[in-house]
Length: 391
Image (cartoon, rainbow, N blue to C red; front, side, top):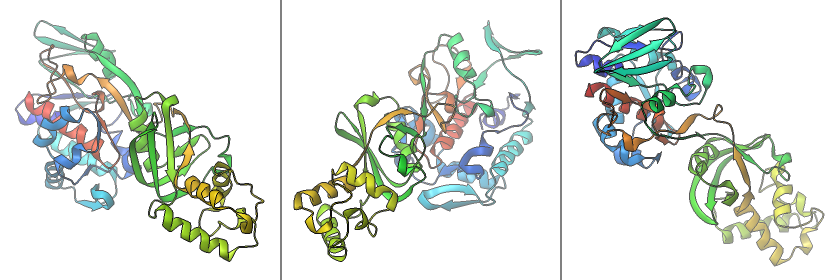
């Protein structure tokens, strides 16, 4: 996007690509389908940005999700909108997104040079010297769009941070975002592989709720994953996890009183059974034992001797099932990287360094990140458009 936007202005543009082909990271987005953007208004878009939404206001308004949709469809890429306003290529092929961008670039005579591992970028007088092991490229301007540290197999190895630091630009410590959360699983081993739908997961910091998500979640060998856990990881990745607790509401659609009535009906049905067998209609079998454990109710307790206090404790355990986070999965496993080039040193309208004339940054190398749903790719394309069109 940056290359095309710069070429539209009449510049001679060369893309130096570390990989053997363009858009390698695009191929793995959206499980190979590429959730290219989210068809919502810019104002609603900012609600889905985790860090530095204010910095993005100018470029998102300049190149909105609707602008991107029009751009891709005009380039011959039919799109479709799925649940949650997520936009995908109609073909379900991420490679078609890359081809669309490549076609746009080639029509404007953008030159792609593949297998080019840039080792350094220097500024001499008014020119930049971009150094690779076998060649040096001189240019009037440089756009660094090297991504973060996620999925290093796609070439994202933190080069952009190193280049920025060589010019004295501050880097906010990179951290994993949109990743699994490692938890204290001593009491949760039986839950491995359990997938939950229509549940609510909340994060509390110093016992105060900071964010919650409704949707799907998965218990794994390390802790929790799935869409709502991934989203919460981006909220807690800059927090002291010893002060963070996670609370899972297994029945968010009903309040305590309605749940109590439901439990009483089940208890009447299974009045002579053990409590561990009386919850099969209400909860997934795998989570019954952990729920009873948190409620401090013995598995062998007969339903007909359960007290009101125990029933209240059971409701609390179902509505506020506690999970203790320990750490996040590694940055190489995370869908995106939080942190990066300090945006206070970047012009939000042009993506140009405030101190180094002619040096631009766009995409994930910047300290901006968002939740899942196509928002991070839109950020990449909007910042790319801003950088390219400014030159």
